[in-house]
Image 1 (cartoon, one colour):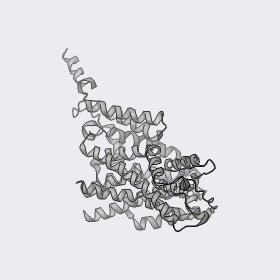
Image 2: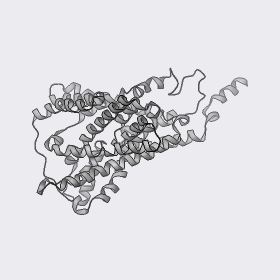
Image 3: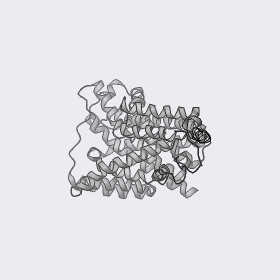
Image 4: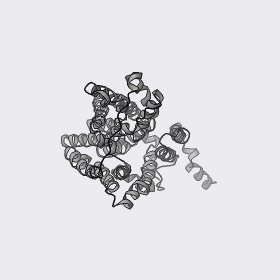
Length: 381
């Protein structure tokens, strides 16, 4: 009987709290969004399952080493790649090997839209400081506006390791909810006539340009923000593997098996880090609110800047301002949202290729923003 009582004390039923149930419900909701709504399933299924995994109730510190925060546990070892910023550069390697920068190279001025969308990062950074967050933590919160989960985790691991869980979940949540959040903002800031603007087809880009871009891009961006070297170095290296034409096997490995394996480990451990007793705090709730504000400002910033650019452009050089919303780095979902809205207004208006230019430049822009914040704050502190 004593052994039975001991066993019962260790079960999840004996240790469950309302907070565990709330977090398990959140995990189930993420899985629902991934499977039923098809919102970023490759991210939300591992994260949602990880949230459930991380909130199975158990007795801590009794030598079983089950939780992600217990040193020596299997989950703790896997989580090491998040805490030390190992997984994000590997994901960027895969993204680089999958990305075609042709549309950006054919119309380089669209890179400005990717830069304009980063305004959400810096405005939220200032707001978080005003709300009482330490400067380093405010920077990590602000980067959520870039809608780039790996960049958010990388910066958090350097500046605010204790906030990795809520920042990562917020960043990935808003990435998944791009089709819900962005359309109302785009429609609010544009007129029907603007949404019907047709852009001229992008020019053909030569192979030399494609090969030169990752090398030139690496030198320009990392000289500006050396702190972003682990992210941008891997991004441009992956792209060179793709465009060189002589390393096809390496490019295929980076863009398929490698990024798939890292995404599984990354998503599962990030989800598991939402352990109820660590994750559910007033700061976490505030981070979610600030993240939403940051993402909305970033979307609005891209659209408004596209409208400003149109004041100086004439004829078929004018931009459809909706593509400015793709300046956030939620690739390719933001570009797909723009394409969907464009076709809805005019069935013959295809904006996907045009929207991909600010979309991929947003990936670069958010990494540069992270590097700038890191360089500034590490110098200050």
